[in-house]
Structures are given as C-alpha cells and as structure tokens.
Image 1: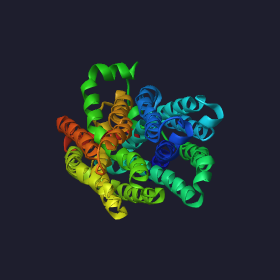
Image 2 (image 1 turned 90 degrees about the horizontal axis):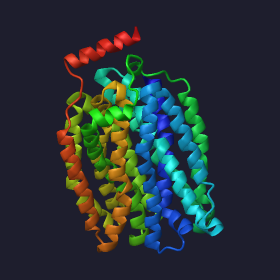
Image 3 (image 1 turned 120 degrees about the vertical axis):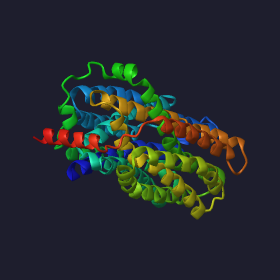
Image 4 (image 1 turned 90 degrees about the vertical axis):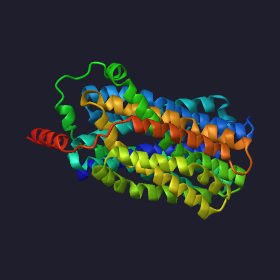
Length: 429
C-alpha cells in the first residue's frame, strides 16, 4: 500500500503541477504576451478564460478515461493521462507570443489548454480509484488521501519554480523566456511519473467485476444522474476556494493592491503547504467519524469565512493575507481530505471510474472555471474591499452545503466493513 500510495501521490503531483503552472502564468504574464491589444483588465480576463477551458475539458477527459478505466482497468488510465498532460504542458512553453505569430498564438494556447484538461480529467479518477480499491476498508480514507496530497505538492512545485525565476530574473527576462521554463520542466517530471507507475498492479475491485458496463457513461446518466449532480454541486465550493486563493487573488493583489509578486506567491505557497500537511489528518478523522460530517463542517466553515477572507486580502498586509488564505484552505481540506474515499464509495464498481471522475470534474467546471473570471469582474466593480467576490464565494459554499446535506454516509461500519474485509481476503487469495 505504501508503494502504491507513493506512486499515486507522485503521479498526481506531476499532473497537477502541469495544470497549476498554467494558472500562475495566466495570472502573471499570459495576458500581456498573448492578448496585447486588450486593456490590462480585458487581457487578464482573456487569460483566465483560456485557464477555464482546461476545466471545461476535464469532464470530457473523465468520460474518455472513465470508459477506459471501467472497461479495461484503472492502470491504463494513469499512463495515458500522464502522457497527454505532460506533452501538452511542454508544448505550451513552446508557443510563440502574439507579437510573433499574431492571433494564432492565443488559439494555440486555447487548444493546448483543452488537451491539458482532457489528460487531467482522467488522472484523478485513475489515481484515486487504484489506491482506494486496494486499501483496507477501515483505512480507506487515510490511504486515499495520498493522491489527494498530490495537488498541493504540484502547486508548490509550480509556484516554487515561478517564485524562484521571478526572484532571480528581471521583469523583462521573466516575460521574454523565464515563464516558459516551468512548462519545459513538465517533460522531465512526466518521464519520472511514468517510471514510478510502471510497476503498479491492477485494482482488485476491477478484477472482481464479472459483467463490465458496455457504455459506462450511459449507465451513469441513466442510473446515477442525481448522484453525479449532487457530487458536482458539493465539490464546487472546494474548487472555488482553491482558485480564488491561488489564481484570482494573485492577479488582484499584484495589479490592484500593488503587492509584490514574490510576496503573494510566498503567502499562497505557505497556506497550500499547511493544507497539504493536514490532508492525512482530515482523512483519519473521516475514517473514524465518517465522510459526510467532515464535509458538512468544512463547508459550513467556508460559508462563514469568505467575507473575512476578502477583507483580509484587501488590507495588502502579508500576514493578514496569509491568515485569510490559511483558514479558507483549512475549510477546504476538511472537505477534500475525505473526498478521495467518499466519491468511490458512492458509486458501484462497474461504473465507478466514470461516475466518480465525471462528478469530480463537473464540480471543477462549476467552481474552478468561472471563479477567476467572475471574481475579477466583480472586484473591478467594487471598492478596495471586493465584497462582491465574498458574496459570490459564499453563494457557492451555500450551494455545496445543500448538496452535501443530501448525500448519504458511506464509511464502512459493521456488516459493510466485514463484507469489505471478506472481499479483500478473497481477492488476495
């Protein structure tokens, strides 16, 4: 389990590195380089629009790779998704700017971001299911939290690379070529990830399936559509919080408040590191007290904290900004620390890869794709404190709270735990 969990964590970290490095670049440099004819605000909005395309592609990727995962196994999903995401990320770093090839530059950016989203749409389902379906029932939350630690690790790698380049290069050097280096590094990381995943074994739950779904998506839409919508609505708040903190706030503070790029990246990275470190704790609590209670607690905290968070951000004081981000991400991790165990348990094994991945990535469209764009537009309409952004994030948190309230508990207890244990023994035999 430790080897499997470590490989899942590393692979997920690499794929989310690819995804996050684009978001950081969109907040800092892509607007002027690829949309120079736009005003500064319009250029930022256009860059965030290309960022959002990746989220739109993720549910399509979850359908594509979910079909493979439910028909041919979870393991092929991990290899295919990593190859696609890594190749498209390296290609982004090679795209000429608008000054070189005109309107073809942003169009290429758009296409590559879409391909990147396709790959990531398959990654989460494959990595989480392979770990969750190998794990013992009473520790499924803990072991499943390892791939959930991948996104914060990937984020720290991406922002650490940008922070290092930002601190060592002049603004002109960073805009000319420095921003491309983290994209090129994705190629090396992808090769490392493929090596780590080459020895993984197939999921025992998949091997026990006698009757595979012919068209998994059709079964999910027919039999589990309500569950998909509820899981998507539930997860929207997590995406909204994370990308408000890591993407929108970076552009807002550097452009509107005059906070330096280095200070903002440091504040964000410190909060994300704390979030990643506490993910296993939330997972252990989920194993002990249940998945649903922690999701409800975290979502309630998000409802209460969104207005204070934007108020602290508006001060421009680094320590207060960090505090606002930290509490928001603690609310986030209380929910998402258990999601890797919760979602697979909600769906039956024959359509689990498709159902869990589609629900997870639709939540990304609702909460992640629109948040940087909507928050940027809302902040432009307000004063120094962007109360409209606080209201927007609070509304999403209330939506997610209602969806979580309608979902059942899934933590294995009593007969369910004994049955899961017997299945695991049979699979081992």
